Amino acid sequence: MSKILLKKGTIINADEEIPDVDVLIDNGIIVKVDKEIKVEENVKVIDCTGKYLLPGGIDPHTHMQMPFGGTYAKDDYPNGTKMAIIGGSTLLIDFICPSKSNPSLVDAYKTWMEWATDRIHCDVSHHMCVVAYNEQIGKELEICVKDYGINSFKHFLAYKGILQLEDSYLFQSFKRCAELGALCQVHAENGDLVVEGCNNMVERGIMGPEAHALSRPSYLEGEATNRALMIARLANAPLYVVHVSCKEASDAIMRAKQDGQVCFGESLATHLSKDDSAYWDKDFDVAAAHVMSPPFRPKLHQKALWQHIQNGVISTTGTDHCVFDYKQKRMGFNDFRKIPNGCGGIEDRPSVLWQLGVNSGKISRRDFVAITSTNAAKIFNVFPQKGVIREGADADIAIWDPKATRVISGKTHHSYIEYNMFEGMEITGVPIMTISRGVIACEHQFVDGKIDWKNPKINVDTKHGRIVKRKPFSPYVYSRSIYIPDPEIKQTKRD
Image (cartoon, rainbow, N blue to C red; front, top):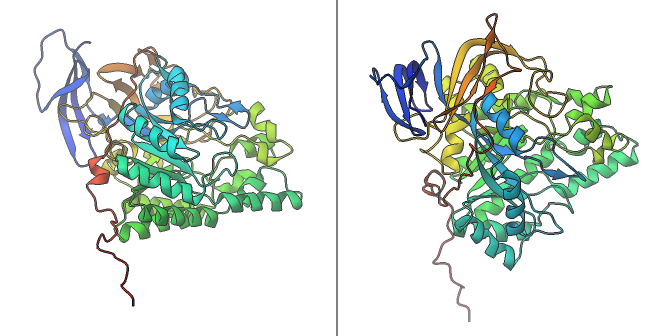
């Protein structure tokens, strides 16, 4: 592995900006950061004048080749990780999801490892979904933490009969996770009432994609978020709420944080950029392409989400990348309940958030780094190995050109589906090179002064990426105060 010197760039970390600085990379690690580094002739020198050096993006929420509704998500590990490095990300945290028919965490882990091992262009780590709970699952949680390096476990309050957990099992799993130093995660929608909403749509003869949004309004997400927070409080467990899409849910997290509860919110680039209007599009393909859970919301919710990014209630941004092509989406042409749920974004998340966040003035460059990389690294316990540009860290770096432009399109993206959720969005500020553990993984070429996004130069194969294990008891999570029951409570003596 050759040495690389990044010359005269501006480092942007979550806590500082360092202008006009050199970064020396050796054997996959950042070994020196200084104003003027002299090197021997055999070191590759990259002029970064006028460019930003950002920690590689960390997408904390993806579903590669996820089984759903009798089919599989189109983008697999090789393609998903290729899209990551094209877009400036260097770590995906993907979900392993057992089924109700076989809820074994161990069996699911083995399946996902067969899919991922030696098939990834960048580093990948994993969350585990808990879809049932009993004594055996409790034992397997420990195996996941101690043997597999998984320190985060997702629970579903939605998808009744498929993935949803009852509150009592949710509580038991939360308690077990806390004992093991793991982080509890929830998909927060009231699954019972979503079913009622779906039945109501069917009774009224509303069977198109618009029924998906109508059947699961924002206040059902707000209720489930608040309930999950209360259960986590009772279990003395830290909580991470995935894909927060609405004001009611983000407000619930804000209140819990104000009370001192250890909890975190995650929002998606899609929820931060799109509203629910597409569900009423007369073109079924357009409407169905937007079917995901939670659904897209009216515009007022986007404003609330950005406000909660600004005040720290929303800590991370992901994609929930789980894509299905038009043919798969048409499985629900006559019944919205059969439309596979999922949208994309791995490739475009950093650029979209830069455009909507930094370029609009909503957030600073440092805030951008925090919500796209550093906070996830801290929460999921890979910091300071990842999520920061400093001596001793992995050399995961996106070289960012703040003046380069592109227009997002399904014609130039690298997903296996025909459409793009951000179609037509004009971006100023894009990654032009992605370095993954000291290797130049992706380079974007310029033709006639314009970036050729469709034809990047990929310099790594699918054996470059590593499966990243994560230790429990993340200091960023477990060094904070968690509600502890009073150990002195005793039964009152009575005559």
